[in-house]
Image (cartoon, rainbow over all chains, first blue to last red; front, side, top):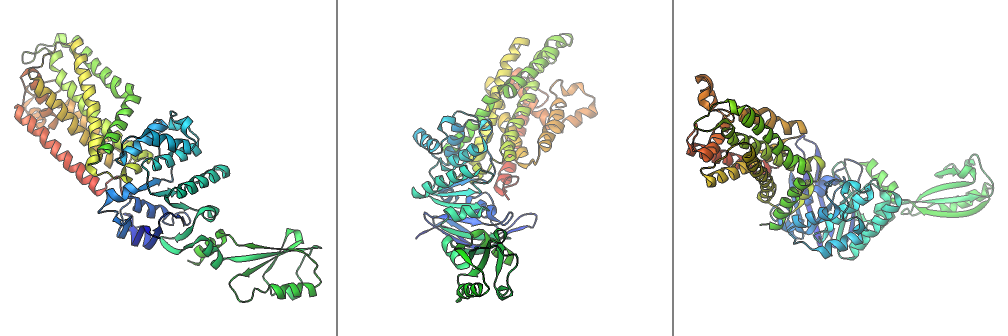
Length: 307
Length: 253
């Protein structure tokens, strides 16, 4: 698939000598949902700010749709929509004018039908004449998305789109993002909610201290780096583990009614067969078995810790 | 040229004026009218004519300049500082707009607002003092040039200011004293010789006298010197703003 965004050897050092990015290389494919994952201060916002033209790169090049972001800034920026992290809106302006203003900035003639459609899609049409300061936080977030979509971009950057948003609204946002992808928009989002990346991203990049640690398909990442947990429910509670089981990575959970066993899915021998054999010999009666793939969150914590 | 962006910024800024009509238009008109009442009608009657013009009429060009300068600086400095302060400047920086287009949008709107206020003040002045304009075209030219120049100057202040205090320092500490001491309310000849010489270093003197010449055909300064001074300051402001915005001072890291 064609690359929409191509970042090569990108570094950024701010005037206070803080190095926010260090030799980043990244390709984002057309029509994918790409999640940039990282702790606070990892360099996620700096990276997307450079691609969008808000921050100047120190070293390296960035291309959007095969155009250089500095030499051909009009062509690259026309393709991009940006939803910033903060709720930065003109508080005393009404919703409709706010969204129309952004469309104008992108050299597009007024288009009432388009603005109406966006506002309706984002459930904002009945608020079109409301001032921004009369809206809830979730609505303001949606106004920012409407602004970013006002000029019909093909690439949409969302910087922490669901930060501070309740669970229900977060899931609504995910639907909005998926719908946009279905309409052909490439989505790049930054987040530190692992479940968000896990739920909607096709690919994930983990960034920490300005360096790209890993870039992979979400499912691959979970599969290749993940551990699984086998939960064994017992008929009777146990307080301590028999000596014959001390060599296994076991944890007593559920007030002694269950035992968790962690194993690596990639290793040749998972140790499950021998564990179950040893448990039988130790006189433990099994009630049920359940396995669970470790979440992206655990992988992320491990990756960041390693660096 | 991104005309839609220029139009968007221009009308976005003009909308701010519509939303804050009292602060943007009524307040400067009211405060200038108070000068006309106190210095023109009340005290002015006790002061003899200056260069054949009644004192009330004499101070109109100076007071007009005072308002134009402070309004132009305040409009444009606030216009660019406010989105910096709220963070909404991101969308201007991320849009496919050149520095020139940004300047035209913001400065054009600021100059228009000042021009509207200036015209209203002129109309208001006719209620309090006898007003004659010998060279209306020149007066209008100077009015537009002053609004543009000081809107650019204000834009530069807004770009470089990091907080509200810095935003206020130049207009309050520098511009207002320069206007009051630049012959707005008196002629240079009224001052002792030493202070006359000092006043010639005040750039506002040349603006006020240029405007006064367009009204009454009398001035402390040759009209060409006034026009050239204004154009020179306009050029300095253009260069300053161009450098600041191209280098990203105050907006881009």
